[in-house]
Length: 449
Ligand code: NDP
Image 1: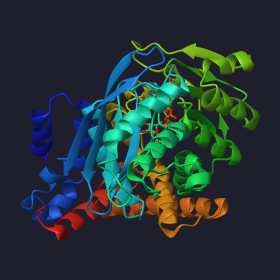
Image 2: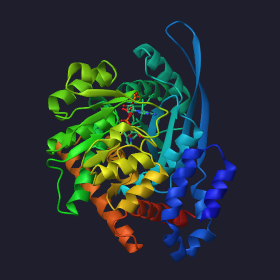
Image 3: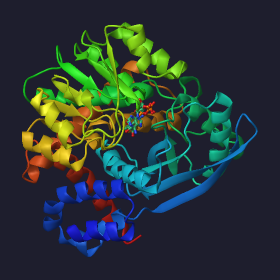
Image 4: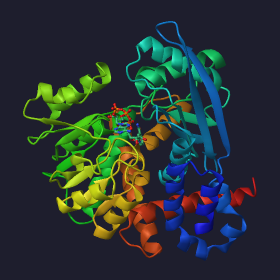
C-alpha cells in the first residue's frame, strides 16, 4: 500500500493535502485489496489517484479602480465511474492544485456513499471574495465562467458552492453560463429557489452533519438533547449546523472565522443565530461583532502561530468542525477528549490532521469523518439535479425527509462496511471502504479507460 502513497508523493511532492487524503483512504482499504487481487492487477489505485482531467485557466477581470487583476481558475474532474463529475467551487486565496485534488479525491468516495449517481470533482480559484464589491465579484465570476462553461454541463460536470462560493456567486456563474450556452439547464447546484434551486440545499450540509451525529449517538442510546456543542466557522455549514442543533435541543456555544472565535456560555439561540446570518450573509462582517452585540460572549483572536486552537479546549460534549481543512491538530484533539467531548461530526472537509484522527480513533469516541458526515450537501445537490431533470420542485418537508433518510443510510453503510472488514465502530474505515468498493467495482466494469 505504501508504494502507491510514495508514488503520489514522488510525482507531486508539493501536494501535501492530497497526500494526506490518499494516505487515509489507502490505509483503510488494505483488507479490501487483499480480498480482491483483481483490483491490483487492474492498477485501480494508480488510476484512482490520477484525475480524469485537470483544467487550469487564466481568469482576468477589472477591479473597481479600473485595474486589471489576474487569478487562476481550476476544475479537477477526478472520477466519473458512477455519474457526472460533481463537487463544489472554492474561492479562497489558499486555493491551489494540491488542495483541490484532495477535495476532489474525497468527493469521489463521499458521492459514492450518498446512494445517488454522482462522480467526483472540485474546482475554484485563488480569488478572495472577502472585501470585494458585488460588482467585482460579478465580473470575476463572469470571467471564470467564460472559460469553465466549455467543460461542464448537466450530464458532464455539475459544480456547486464551497468556501467563498454561496448563493451570490452561484447566481453570477449561472447567469453567465446561461448566456454563453443559450440554454437553461441544471448545470450548477445551490441555485436560488426561484430559478431552479432545491429547498433545503443551503441547509443540507449543516443539517446532514447533525443528523449524522444523532445517528451516531443513537448507537449508544443517547440524543443531542442538552448536549453542549463546539462549532467552528460561521459560514454556510456552521450556520445550519447551529440551527439544527438548536432545533434538536442542544446548546452550541462557539462560532469562528479565520480571525478569531466567540464563546457564548449561555448558548447561541435562534435570535443570536439570526444576527449571525445577517452579519455574515448580508453585511459580510466578522464574527468579532457578535461579542459587541452580545457582551456576555467572549471574543478571542486566533494566533496562527499557536500550537493549538483555544476554541477546541472548552468543556463540551460534542464538536462540529465546520470551517476548513486541518483545523484540529493532535493537541486540539487531546484537549477535546480531556474536556469531555464524546462525539465529533465533521461538517468541513478533512478538518482533522492525521495526528488528531489517530487520537480520536484511539479514544473510541464517536468520530464521523467529513466524507460521511458532511455528505448531506452533495446529496441534496443530487436531489436538485433530479428535480431539474424532472422539471418539478419537491416541498421542504419532502427534501428534508430524503436528506434524513440518506444520512441514515450513509451511517448504516459505514457501520456495516467497518464491521465486515474487522473494525467495528470505525467510521473512517467504514466510509472509505464503502465508497471505494462502489467506485472501483464500476471502474472494473468499464474496462481500462
Ligand atoms: P463558507 O465560505 O460559507 O464559510 C467558511 C467559514 O470557515 C468561514 O467562517 C471562514 O472564515 C472559515 N474559514 C475558511 N478558511 C479558513 C481558514 N483557513 N482558517 C480558519 N477559518 C477559515 O464555507 P462553507 O461553510 O460552505 O464550508 C465550510 C467547510 O465545509 C469547508 O471545509 C467546505 O469544504 C465544507 N463543505 C461545504 C459544503 C457546502 O455545502 N457548502 C459541503 C461539504 C463540505 P473567514 O470568513 O474568515 O474566511
